[in-house]
Each structure stands twice: as C-alpha cells, then as structure tokens.
Length: 145
Image (cartoon, helix red, strand yellow):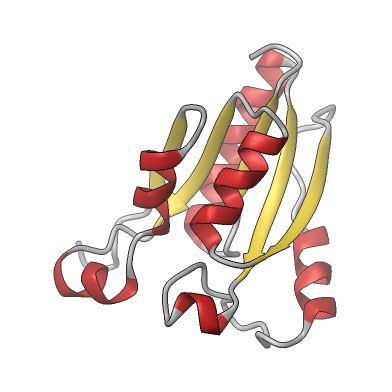
C-alpha cells in the first residue's frame, strides 16, 4: 500500500471518526494518502438509504462542505484531501475507489440488523461486495449492547 490511497468514507458519526483514526494510522505507517469522502444522498435515488447527515441540512452543500473540511487526521504528516460526492452512497464510494486506484476503503458501520437493516439498507455491505479493493469496516456497538 506504500504511497497508495486510502478512501475514508464519513457520515460524521462516531463510527466514521473511528474509521478515520484507523485509516490515519495506516496511512502514516504506509505513506498512503487519505481521501476523506462524504456522499450527499440524492433522495430520489436513495429512498431512505445511505449515509445520514447527522444534524446537517440535506440541501445545504456549503454546510456539508464546511463540515467535511473540518475532518482531519489526528496524526501529523498524513497527506489528505476531501471529496464531497453526490448520489448513491455505496456506488459513489466504489466509484471513487476505482477512479483513484485505492488500496483500501475504511468506513464505519452502524451495525444494523434485522428489520432496521432491511428498511435502511447497508451501505457498508454493498461497498464490501462491489469494491475494487479491500474494505475495512469499523463497527460501533449500539448503546445498551
């Protein structure tokens, strides 16, 4: 992975923060560059599926861009860029990884099961199935689990 690219998908959740921590450590160790990406879901394409905007107005690209720009690795010396994408979350993450010849995708997962997973879908599962490179998912246990 030396001098490669690691895509870090963020939905601004605790799982995404943990994913960034892991990806930053990997990037520092290998010399890889991070692409910190957020996908703005298009409701007509997603019908409730996709990465949530945790308190950010879905129609405000400036707010999303600002929030995305505030996410940086905690480790000095790690090269990174931000990407605000639009569309289906899983498909855009996969497309970015392909376009950038990524060595790894790191993303948090909400760990939904059963009915919630059926209703909300699983971005992480789709990325794992279709990604052109290895995918590391970071699960944050639900409160009370």
